[in-house]
Amino acid sequence: MKADPASQPIWLVTNPASGSNSPASVAAICAALRPMRTLEFPNQPLPTRAELEAAEVATLAVFTGDGTINAAAAALEGWGGALLALPGGTQNLLSKALHGDRTLDAILADVSQGRRVRRRGIRTSQGLSLVEVLVGPGAMWADVRESLRALDFAAMAETFASALRETREGPAVRLVDPPEGQPEGYRALLLAPEGDGVLVEGYDFADIGEFAAQGFAMLIKRNFREGPHDDIGVFPAVTISSAADLALMIDGERRQGGGKERFTCEEIALDFLATHFLASHPVAT
Image (cartoon, rainbow, N blue to C red; front, side):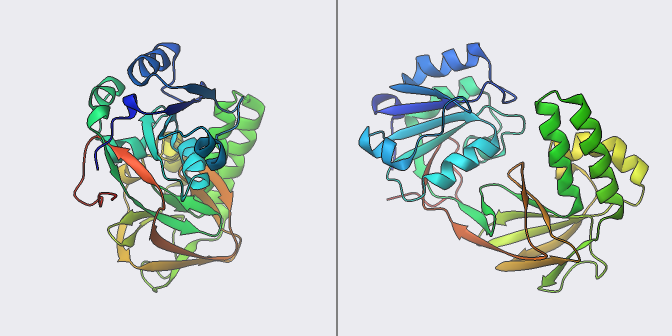
């Protein structure tokens, strides 16, 4: 189903603190989409399903990082409209999946030809992941990223020391169902939706000094797959355990799980607008 969001009621969510936001880029979006309403998160709350339905909004454009897009999408499951994820953050992984690795201007030029698609995500006890979940001591680096966002240098020093200590000394995480990968476990396991299953990659760091130097580049920027890792496999669902509660990073945002957590790959009950159509995305009817 094709949709022209520019000719339908549309709301826009921005986040000035996100990596790619700027007054000029927000102005370009407003000129292209002509939203009925613009919300500046977190100064204004994300719209609820009831608010969008009451205003008869057809498309919610979200120009933020993956974490805020995740929060918006999770709250809107079951809504009859469509979410347009625009590259407003640092990594913009969801936007790249829906539009390709393209500029904001290129996406806006094609948005009138966008298709409503459904995606699969990772379900966890701590919320839905649209893109990826990092499990294990390595996820503690999300706390460092938060202190960087706030330019809180005292907190950054504290969270850096904590992340380094946990990565070095914290108990490893193991894939126990199915029992795959290193029996001794990993410093981090990366999970992502792959077809109908959960893709699992394992990360270990033999030289902790080298890891500390690369921690910002690889974990805070979330370029996980640039580092050496084990391709463990793709499974219908996985269970991960540890001797301590599992640190999680869900689409870049920090969460805390229990000592054992189950992760499944399921369809998200929400349409997304895609301008770079991928055959793996079933078209919504």
